[in-house]
Picture 1: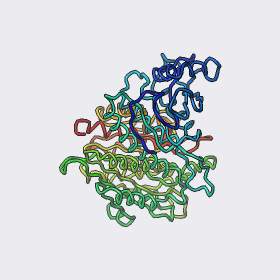
Picture 2 (picture 1 turned 120 degrees about the vertical axis):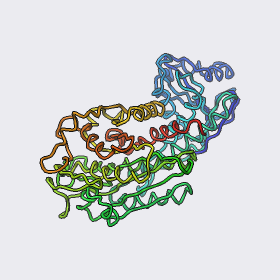
Picture 3 (picture 1 turned 180 degrees about the vertical axis):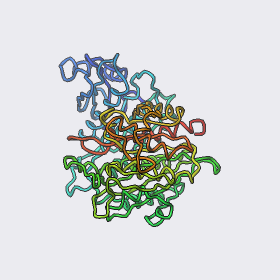
Picture 4 (picture 1 turned 135 degrees about the horizontal axis):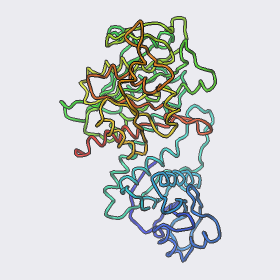
Length: 498
């Protein structure tokens, strides 16, 4: 989809479709009111006839409006004007993209960025429009033999802004498209089945990303190299699978040579059966999504490279399967991590922390400024926060606040949880330095407490994305979260240098 910027009156613009907002109780937005006056009350008449009320998500399409230069006009409901907020704006943009794509119009001009939205500027509204429009048209049909094709899909979208805002709108579109490309990559990888998206496949995707951007250098360690480094925790998870594990590193060098990088670590369990502590069969197919942390790292690196961000970022992905083979780790086994700390594996389904702990030790080689790990780690986080926010735990308050603020800006939110010393005692073991689980209580927190033992030498944060990484039901599929949050976090860090 191609995006451009315009600054024209709505009835004068020549386009396949003009998109205008309407508030509940049939209140026209400013652009819709202008269009209505030029067309001698066309929209007012339509609304009085009862075609729509302006409720959030409603759409009405009118062909060949008299007195206007466009072929179609799409009215999009925005809900009550005094309750119009970020969510309503995003709903309107998504509804518009879907409706125009089905309308037969191959191009559209959207006046939605002109809607008044408290606390949000033109940059935010235009960037969100690009991100959401692209996401709304995503289809997880890569492996279908017969794809559902739109006869005449939406290919070009222009955003209409005030003439004084055209430059900022161009920047917003560039950033929005880059982030959308990263989200799309993360969704595409997440939606692939485990028989295709293996650790080796993830490594190949990382190499392809490196081949596409000269700023990205990729390296991949095999199991022999990991054994030499002493990564006994990571390798213990891989023992039950015939698919070899991989440790993938991507170094994006957009900043100065001596600047310390931001390190992003993504959990890459390409299929998680639970191992010997096997999961229930119901919905086990969804455990292909257990590599969505890894996918989000690849997506974020792609967005960084697309925007040419002036900072250094390193992505680290420990990738493996977790299966109950004859050589699989057993409950009660004790393994030695790269850090030298020993771990009693009381539950082989708590495998994500075992691969992440060695990755946390490995990333010290990059001398990081900060480290953020991203993982579909605990079902407890789904119970605590549902599908709306990722869980956030950190050993540094300033880092946590930066991530929280980035999530608010990107509308890809996280929520803070405590990392108090009192929770550490739940990980005590009679036989090793620690156990890999801490019991039923505070499962998300004790998982982060486990990881914190391997992140004492740098500023670190943990994002538990188990509730937000994919959707269930009829919209089943990867969401691409938290690529938007992570990219905004990186954008905020280089705000003064781009």
